[in-house]
Image 1 (cartoon, rainbow, N blue to C red):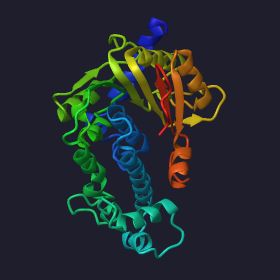
Image 2 (cartoon, rainbow, N blue to C red):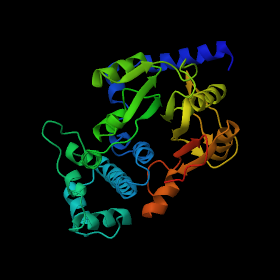
Image 3 (tube, helix red, strand yellow):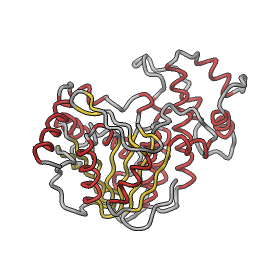
Image 4 (cartoon, rainbow, N blue to C red):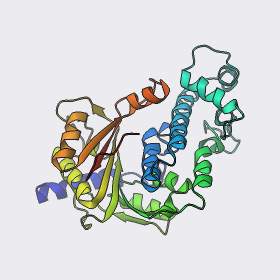
Length: 337
């Protein structure tokens, strides 16, 4: 990437984020269906971390957390549309409606059985909000169910530490859930973000963690410094040259794998690079993403969110059917979840 263009893009991205108050950035992309405790791609990041640390050990638990994300995302949408809590409880827990997605009724039946080791998170989620937070659609104890499960499952385990770089980490957006579920002690984690306000927010929450301000376009970090490099919703906001530079830089920094979560993809064709004010709102081609990864010498796989949920749970109603996750590996391809 031309140095002048690189500096111009960095400056524009920095301005775009720094124009917002720190308080806004601290709550941005961490609530509602973007809450990392519910967001399917955030759950996938934690699943990939757990599977990298303990290959194959937690497959059943990962599937249950994915179902939890689907179910509570659906429920959040209903509550956000002013659905009646009592009517939803009757429909879901007492099977008084025939129009519910199968994944919802299946989860409710499973949670009712003696064999289920989980608390009934649907009933918890349908409890009224606390008086201290009347606008909160679901109680924290429902949202934190799997954080507590993972803490119990990981307690006492040991594994070689995994060096992880998260690019565009925001105000520790995904790290909050990584930490809450007990994965952080297994990681040598570094968070990189172009916004100094985001980094200040992240350090205020986690003062001992290696959060640093910087750009993936010119990170200055040594090659192969991390086992895994991951990012959420990054390439969609870069120019064509910026996206190519960022992808190459993430591959350069990774010893083993790169995981890229995108919220806006299409099946094939060329990437559609769409400028919007001082940044971009791109539509990436899944076939072109695979080709981009292979051109950088990686084995490439792609997880399409909608088919994944259809396959696992016969669910076709997730709010982001364009989301996809690109998995790049520097040796043999990784099997998809």
